[in-house]
Image (cartoon, rainbow, N blue to C red; front, side, top):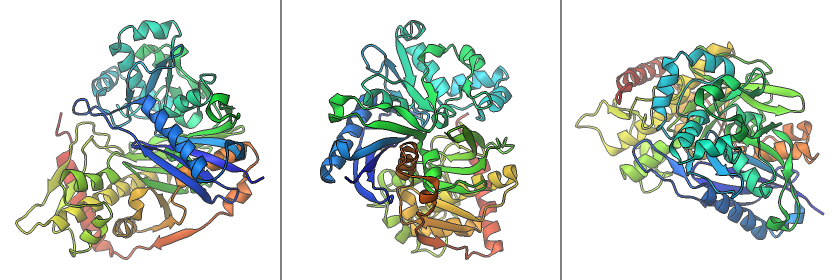
Length: 495
């Protein structure tokens, strides 16, 4: 009987389920959006119960529409939005507060206090991260400090913390397993990537009881089995990975120096640095890519907070577009950006700047500026931010990039991909298989049950399009100088 791997791709705006066969073909997919909550400026929340329900609905739908049964699923793999924080009651299984999303900035003050106490270098050395509201640690502290009786319940071992992978594993196993993997743990700002353990000093400083933390397991390993009540059969859950690490694996970036960029809500670049932890002097993050068997592999990462969300802003906020797909056509209606530069720092700037107080800005407007100039400049801003991160990666790792592998919704935009190649002066490779994140989760899950092996994975190679640089050096330098001038003026606006 033919078997399949079910990948759960739980993102920032939707829960997806993707079914793969043993040739890594997509045999079925289902996607369900969930509500974004913005209770006050700078705050972003999700309903964790809604995430679980939409994920479960998508699983049922993909099984039904693919004409298979749960018995045909060899294993389940999870890729998830990272850093987003859920704390739930172990007895009731109910969250004590809405999930605080990675984009949320409410804990900037807690971060400033940590910096003032001299923790910047300590955090960087222990976790590979910078102190920022982006990560889970200060979100946990906020919930424990602001939800009535939460701190005492945590001390009494009645609460459980998890990133979304842990929450889904808990729900899938009927509350039997409270676990995460090394890639997700390394994004909490509480996990020591040197000792590979939760860090007592950081937990004590933030007043977070260790008892609420999940067990950390290998990225590709048996986490547990699904509860019989869900599918009528026990299915092994055999991988969990942060979505960006899953995409790195899905792109088969197994060799040192290979890199990918996911153009989602934000842009996330990861470069595999192998078994070597590369400490960044450029504001990048040192993170765990995955742990398989006894081998931990690391990556350098740069996060751009606003990527594809900038296109959505043009569509929904400015109403310059009726669909995101129109942006490529609009950008090509003008010869250049008309001197306009857009800095989409709507939630601050990520790597390599890490400015929580930067805000969005538009420079170079004139009476000749049209909607198409604004659209083109906004698309260009995504490529410029990617350039800044890749440039920092090359400096930190002393590795020159020759190719960037891409995925995510915005990589469908041909104008953006060509401009990205031009501004980076490297080849941009876009695979026909766009499901890099889900594919990575499936590969990792399949490895654990013998469904896939490394040799078979490496044989899956099918680029849809390769974009090669066409821009001359003078034009490239002029555009980058203009961009960096605009960045300097947008910094610290809300401080």
